[in-house]
Image 1: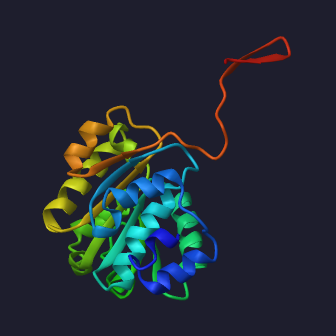
Image 2 (image 1 turned 90 degrees about the horizontal axis):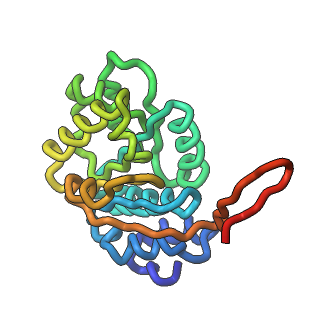
Length: 219
């Protein structure tokens, strides 16, 4: 964390310093790729490798520096509620955080008062269709599980949503997060983002075969 002290707001460093002592490999790569300079990134790393902190650094830096709001897009309401709890626990005393996953027929004007808005792609699509005026104040967009662009159900909505946001918000920083992307280079190019890849994980992944009560791992 000392390596980014002075590059992020002092208040943000103080909050993170209580729980984070050092950056994981993917996080260090993201910083080197321009995360703290507002560059858009596509982060493709294993589960539990630290992708969420990358998103937090981008979002909270923008908020504390008063550059604009941050929108965190997740595919499921349950995941949105989980992220809301996590953000509120860590940043609730320093920023206004909202969870918007409800009525799809409302512009939710009260969201103009919030710094971080956690929502689903369907809800944000609805907010755009209702011309929510606060959208213009968004500077950071995080897209969790961005590989769902390939999903027959959610993919088209997410693709249109990203396209509209890129057109409306000329200087927006987009942070795409995923553990599994088949064509990361192509997706990064479409997002106009730098690709961050890493294979480090906190628990080593082993592959093997289980047969007749015996488990044999591959070397």
